[in-house]
Length: 420
Image (cartoon, rainbow, N blue to C red; front, side):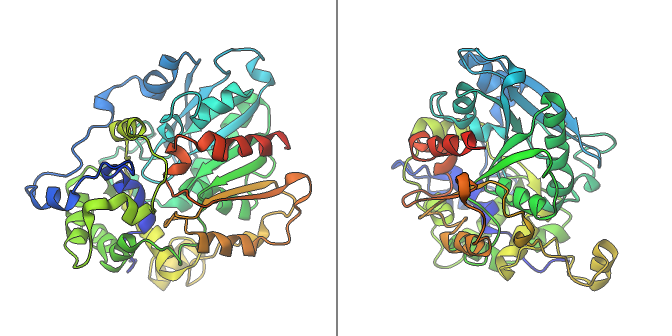
């Protein structure tokens, strides 16, 4: 079993709810210490238990058409998928619009793309610019907890890491959108959403159905992560402890995560009063209204195995499949004593890629991103096939929650999409 611990990457998304980068700070350390063992510090509900789905909650009330879809993976997971076929003004028929698939990061769901006002949120911006927008929701999140034979109370339901998102969730979702529209699609991912795209492309998956990939806060290598709090989490062996205690689901609102945070915040020198900055880096441009909406609906569960996988990446600086830390188990799963690596050099040189990364992001740290870009150097950059953007003052959450993200990032994304 893995000897690595919880990755910084996951904690970032999880903990960013406690400080907003707008002058409001929650003293989580005091809150945790004052909390009884049977209670969790994550007291906010997932949308106050509304059952209408993402379309009803955040799309149709803005005047947009929205469709709820489901797709079943070949290993039995039933995933939620939302479609915004046209912009607010209607216009071109849906079948004539190029589809774009949006894929969220870890401990988030499709609401990632809908937290900003319609004139600023990427999903709405794309729809208003003539694209047929599809929003993915990974297994285990609130609206993707179905399975053909398992329930979320079954341990086997949570026996997956991002390897399974690469091999099952993403292909099933891309195939579904392609079959529904009859068109090749653009892909846009944030954080974990970039990782599963890069891994899929490196294996030659999806190439016949994708036009391009846009990667915001790209994650491939994590060895240079510059988040002090996350590094403490990795060194505490917490993920291993949770796994051995059979907590297969990593629920940000659960008792186990409350205990995890309690342990981290008790480490000498750790300041849990400003968790978001300590984990994600200093986000420059978050408005309190956007953060309030985030707090209402996020974060979302994932599997503990997925957390361990991220921790392995952070500890080793490698980009490989899940390591069972046992040669027999690795042989059983992979036919070799160590897990296979994902090679970024196998991504076709002429496949269009756009990367955008921030100078203050300590999860998708600029040093790790530059390692990735260096691996990909020499690619065909004619006609905008290989584009990069560096936003000096952006951190991890700015890319999906900053009030100026449209002008700073999304307008360039639109330029890239129009080239392909």
